[in-house]
Image (cartoon, rainbow, N blue to C red; front, side, top):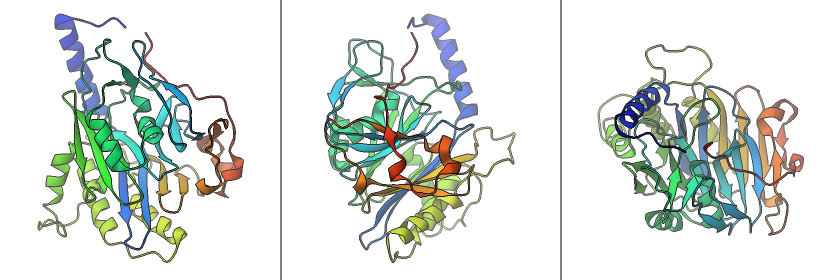
Length: 352
């Protein structure tokens, strides 16, 4: 790709930042440790359109190549995983066989991965989540690895024109949690079991400070009700904090669904003054201790799930797929048996 230089580069950068400020898209992630052995993660995917989301089963031992034009980083997957793909281009969330979970959410205004240096190895940004799932069993391992990454992460432009400027949350079945953001080209890591909620702008340190202004978290402000990332952050933290202990696996998942439904954005009701608000197109719940992965499309009234204990992640097994978003009206309940053999997944990259 030919890089613009001088004044043109600065002008294009300014235009891009302005566009991102007007098109930043919201999502919410909530980690809940019930205290009696259930660790569950829920998320909303808020977007302008369906993204052809599909469940992908990846066995161990897959040889990966960074989805970049020059000097790709290469690795071989240590763990098998169940991931949710977007646009048939990459992984935007998933969980591996060890119970490590990862989610990518938009951070379109403040995320900055730095200028691409072709002398340094790189992976595509839509492989970032998958890299964690392929290589690490716990949050602690993933965080330590992130601190010493010897490769870059390269964003790309999605088919709808949006740049993939995201931050990532990682969780594991012990209840550990971390949020990773690239600001000014450097990774900022927030690692603590208390960091159970993530939305979008502003950066995570500012979200934590904002939370302290509200009741239950040290302040005197009442619970906010807007659709903004900061308001959703506070509501998600508040409602997750008040969940009762579940009697069983299914009840625990239902409790987390109740929280993420509360912070979802309904269809319609556009706000011309807040163009960064998008409707929720699906919700997922990952039961990290119960090895069950739930999917709920907001375009359909049914919830489906995959039982990961029934999946074979052995090296040499074929990749598998279920186009859950396209097939949702023909699916219900446990859909593990509906997963079919698929061609090896090809991660998207910027066109050069």
